[in-house]
Length: 94
Image 1 (cartoon, rainbow, N blue to C red):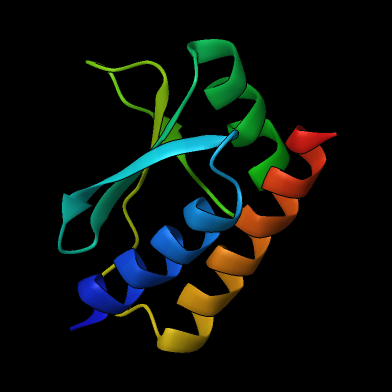
Image 2 (cartoon, one colour):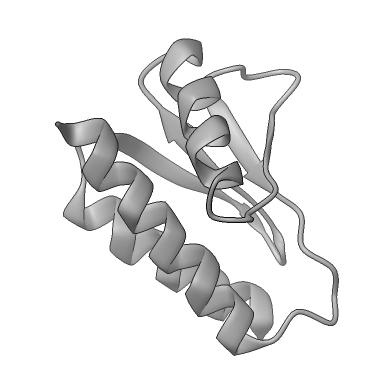
């Protein structure tokens, strides 16, 4: 249920910023956001860290960042991650 909630939140952000996020992928809580290229994804990782959100580059797809939160994550924390991603997208769209 948390994975579905998280994916819907990420997809809502991606829908607002289709020029920044190309696709949301994954199942359960192991989810990823695909950006246009690896430089954009690495910049997004850097910006997310300023919002205290840990993410990493996917090894097999460098233009995707992945989120792997603990199973005990709350909906409140998921909302915070999605809000941080939205702020990052706003910054990257400039």
